Each structure stands twice: as structure tokens, then as C-alpha cells.
Image 1 (cartoon, rainbow, N blue to C red):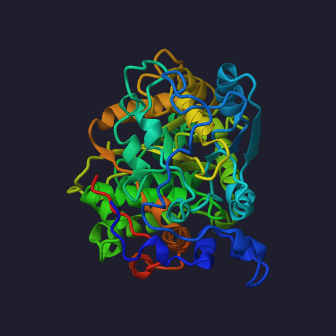
Image 2: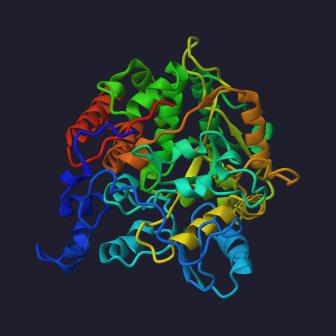
Length: 483
């Protein structure tokens, strides 16, 4: 449901370009890219469904895929790699449509690669819109650039045609991809978030993951005395790894409502005691980070951890796979929940964030939307999901797809942590998809907090100021969530 302070009609072409980062590409007021960009429409116009089918539909071909229609797939080649697409999903598609040509594009610069194409109208069919350089999904949707994925979730499952796809995936998956009340994003990976460490090193040194922040500072002192950096993240391109930890801790203190309030731009949400307390606690941990880490990228910090130069690293369940080529036999990944902050925390220490993540989108103006929907349906089959886990080392949202698989130490550790958490699950955040400008500001303020340039009170005040600015901006379509 949209809670709008301004309809998409209020968005000018230049505002839309600014939100997906295209302004710099326009050569003057009369630039051809600006002229080629779509104008805003009404809310109904901004929710396109699948294009008219090029072939007859059937139970086996619910979207009417034309057998020889080309398909272009753009994959973010980050921690998950891209072999899952090249070696699993694309061959499965080709098996059904052998006459179709598939163009595979792998990049870590999604926005840089695709922004000019969205401006010109020459968009690919299927996109893994992830990483540091991702596009603003909220802005894309408000301009009618994203396909409504309702037909995908209502389609019959490949494994059991008597079931709809929405009934074969984990609860909350569809909801996590809602924009303006409709599913425009397929969040495919079931990710767990926490503090990652080398269990072999910790056993050797007699260290244990901390259960509260008092223990956290105490073990950091021991680690520092041993000559290691106790805690680190990459300030140059992955400060969002750290703001996840701040938000998770706030949710443990107050409960998930604080994250819903932040997403919904509730007045004063960033000024809540739970956020201030969390920011202050993490700022204390920031004192154990070498300031040089603000200039490093994620793989540089992760490699230092593999060399036992860094003890704790905040990240998600893709980490182990991303580092597999740099991980020595002396290193074995394990994950611990974020420590408790106060004895009166609403959630216990065992609470952990588990969420559907890694967003995949289909451009509304793609040439082969039917093929893109079928490609997504293949991903959501047990065979497609199992192959993804084998290639990427990460679990998917497909129920039962990991049964029988031999799990790596890190993923086994995560599964154990999820089992210990039970129903105490920290919810996901939606502002990252809805309000890119707010997310960008949070990266900046997180670095300033963790590297000692501002206090927790200043962090919260600065974020509240930005949230108020986003809320007051009538060109930004407002969203709302209740769960």
C-alpha cells in the first residue's frame, strides 16, 4: 500500500535521472538521453505486468515464452559469483528452449553498466540488481521501469504444478520485494547476518564470541593484546555491512517495530533510545578498528581476516563462498549473533537476522519479459535452487531445496544459529530498496560514527534530518509496511 506524499506524476525527468544516477550522463538541457527517458505516470501506470505473450500459454509454458526469443541476463558477480547462472540456470533454460540465444553479462558495476541502457530504452531482460553499485529500485518502479512479478508468484511450480510458486517459498519472501504494495523484486537468497570469525583461531586462543557488549569489549582487548585487529569492516565500499549490525542491535533492544518505523519514515524513528543506545555501543567497538580500514574495500578486509589479521567481521552468509579462493585450511568460518546490549532487551542474544535478500528484477520494457519470468520460475524450482546453493554456497528461499546437500562449515554454523534463534528473528529493512538517498546517507554517517568523527547523538540527528528530507520530498513515492 502506498502512503504517498506525492504521486509519480510529480517526478520530473531530471529528478528520475538523479535518483537512478543518470544526471551526469546528460550533456546539457537538451541531451538526447534525457529526452529518451520515460516520464512519470500514475500509480497504475507504474505497475506494468508481463508484456503480451509471443506464444500460446500452457501449464508447461505459463508465460507464453517464444521458443527462439533471445534472452539477456545481467548478473552481479560479487560474493555469489556468477557460475550459478552460467552453469545451472541458463543451461536449464536452454534445455527447454534450445533455439533461444542467451547473452550472459557479469559485472560488479550494475548501475554504471545499466544506467545508460535504461536511459536509451535498450534494457536487458533479467537483472541481479545487487552490490555497492546497485540501481534505485524505488525510483525505477515509480517510473514504470519494473515489471510487476505477481504473475511469477501466481504461476504453477515446476516441481508441483498443483502448487503456486508463492506456496513453495519461505514465508515473507514475496512481502520483502513489495514496492507500492506489489512485488517488483524477487529476493532469492535466504541470508543470515552476524559476526563472522575463524573458529579454529578462537579455539586455539581460548576466545569465545561475546554474548553482550561488556564481553565484546573484553575479548577485543585480549585480541588487541595478541596483535590482531579485533574488529573491522570495509569503509570504502561496504559500510552497509556495519549499519546492518547497528540496526540489528536496535531491533534486539526494542523489537522489530523500530525497523518498521525507520522504513515507514515515522517521525523521530532515528531518535529512539534503541537506535541511540545501539549506535553508542557500536561506536565503542569502533575504537578497536584501525582507521586505515575506512579506505579499504570488502575483499581487502576479508582477505586480512583469512590471514588472521582481523578477528571479527560483520557480514552475511555469502562471505564464505566469496572468500573460498583465499581461505587457507587453517581458517574455518563460523558466525555468532550480535551481542545483547541490555538485560532488558526485547530479543535474546540468540536472535539473528535472517532475511530474503539478493534482489532480482525484470525491466518492464525488456524485449523478452515472458522469457525472464520463465527464467525466474526455473530459479525457483528445487533443481534450480539446489544448483544455486552448490555453486554459490548460499541457501535460497525455496522450501526443502537444501535437503541432502553437504553444507560448508560456515553455512552449517549459520543453520545452527538459526535453529538456536527459533522464532526470535530480526526482520529485514526495506528503506534500502525504497529510498536510495537515505541509504547512501546512512553509509556516510556510519563511517563517521565508527571512525570517531561524530557521536551517537549526532549520528541519530543526522539520519533523522535526512529521513525528514526524504519524507518531505514530494518527488519520492512513499511506501509503507506493516510486517
